[in-house]
Amino acid sequence: MFVQNKKIQDILNYYREISYLQKINSVLDYDLNVSMPPKGSESRASHAAYIEELIVNKWKNPKFKEMIEDVQTLELNEFEKAIVRNIERQGKMYWRVPEQIIINLKKETSIAFVKWSEAKSKSDFSIFSDSLERIINLLIEIADHIGYKANRYDALLDQYEPDLNFEMFNNIAQKLRTFLSDFVSEIVNSKNYSDVNSGFDTEVYYDFQDQKRLSEFVAYKLGYDFESGRLDVSAHPFTSNLHRTDVRITTRYDLRDFRESLTSTIHEVGHALYEQGINPEFDDTPLEGGVSLGIHESQSRFYENQIGRSKFFIKYIRYLLNLLFNNVRNQSDEQLYRFFNQVRPSFIRTEADEVTYNLHIILRFEIEELLINKKIKVKDLPEIWNDKMHGLLGIRPKNDREGVLQDVHWSYGYIGYFPTYSLGNLYSAQIANKMKKELDIEYLISRGEFIEILNWLRKNIHIHGSLYYPNELIDRVTGEDLNPDYFIKYIQEKYSDIYQI
Ligand code: MG
Image (tube, rainbow, N blue to C red):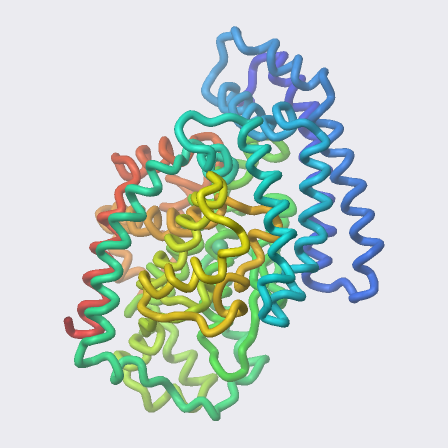
């Protein structure tokens, strides 16, 4: 057993109940998103809130904090240290922030979600504005209670990505911004632009059952264990980790575009493979689960982009695409590859391509930092958003729906979350670069031999769960700290080729 110390064993026994309660809540949440009938929502909210209350009480029990304080001076092994570190990090929210503030945030966010939905459907930011302002004020209080060294925003970033801070991400963002803005305008002005971006016939329908078969086949081939998971449908695709042996994914089907379900499925498979591959000894302990949102997203982006949007993968699945979809047959491999990799400045983040995607994140990151440090006012957000969008992508949203209201995150109180999406892209390119030195991944992909790739990720990343923090993990895997140059090089090479720049 990886834990020897008796006191740590006691901590694990206590923590196991928290872990069980979280998993029970995940089942309720999965059901809510996938199969609950609409009228069930009110009663479900009270069930979930009750479980949540039990979790909070478990955390706030003074006995638990004493148990952690009691092991501070002991000699601990690597696993035991990581257990204590992970609990202390999660505990910050419960131990440092007064309970009333957490309760107020919970109340405020449940109202905010309804307000946001209404505002979005009417494309009117003013409906959501007051609610968002109260959320920002509560998050400012929370950040001040949690504490930070240089920037208030650091306290919030750290909740999603351990040890990430404003300065670190800002350096990355500025570097990406310079490269990407120039590169996007090169693409838009390239001779090949309209040629690459002209799509297939949109009058064609891609049968739901055929798309489903394709998704299931690809998930299975990539190594997703259907005995420990299932594939369902939801409005926004997601992965739900109910336990290492029950990791469920969802996708969505667009009858006019088969790329949507295929790439969404591959993305979620990437998340799920991570969870399915964690050391079973870590089950129900603070070492279970992926270590951070950024590392998690690196696995999904690796599968979605480095594999799913590669020439070799398109080549590999085209016999199946030919079989399922009539109008794919008369396209060349090259045309099909370009079809999966069109670059186009657009308003909606979730529909953005690999090149423009990080610019959407930079926009949100800059706005969040200004909000949390009270440098801008909530009511001015639509204008600020549109100006920044124009500066980054050269386009200006016509209304709030395609601008400031498009994402749900702020209504949940998730400020500091967006940067982890970019980190995922950067980590994935850095990891792919390292993997290519040890495996001929292009050959493996074109042959459909994905298991060797999965085994490499298992051994280097998945197995460790939350044992190492992201910076330590990336250093162990690649021999250096996070380095955005790998992503820049990857984008430059791939898209210079496609657009003949
Ligand atoms: Mg994801």
